[in-house]
View 1: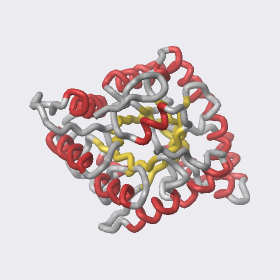
View 2 (view 1 turned 90 degrees about the horizontal axis):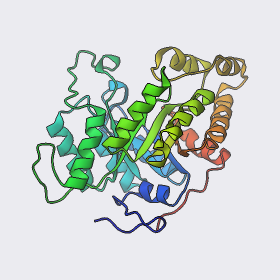
View 3 (view 1 turned 180 degrees about the vertical axis):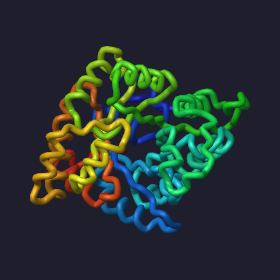
Length: 317
């Protein structure tokens, strides 16, 4: 059941740690762990124990890039058992509405309290390109579904349930791509559907992100949803070029590519760029947190967080 919030009189909708941190006005830090392609949770456990005091939550990805990996539900439980706070990703690509609702119920029963709703990368990008996708519902419908289950205690069919899953609901959004107004309209749809926090696509072009945030503030959306700016620490100019040329929804300025190309130590330069980006992004009005996506470089998280001045993380009683 909900309990009274302490500051503005609103009630908490969930038992989520993230919801309480945002309500306290804390600048929230989340990161991401990509499960292994196998039946071992060793890397998830290792990264959780290594970095759990450096962030407020770990996204556990759901077959990212359409590559088969250990499931996000299992990964979230491993994070939970080892002292971390899991943010379970749930995609629409691989499940119809029956499977999605069943997995949501099961995940909540296992102690998971935060869910991030996504469409999912197309299967043609993954290691089973001939697989059939599902997309029975889209990401906005998924957000609304989770909210309906939580707030109305109903399944999508209208059937009532006794024990509702009380998830804190997250979604993703890209601040890039013209026209920006359409990106803001899409964000507004997700907020109306029930999204309570947003993690953005990785930001390298701070100026364009600031333009997007200006439109977001004009629409009043920053007052209705907690927006976290996405940051990817890069190891090499090759990785940066790949994102610039191949990843939809990412804008990489040429000068950043040139800077990495000239770096004597690309990994150190990548860390420095990430720290500089965080400093700029946290000063943009309406940004309530940072989501750091190491993309296979999870060990870098403690150093990035520390150098960015975001350690130590707040404690929830």
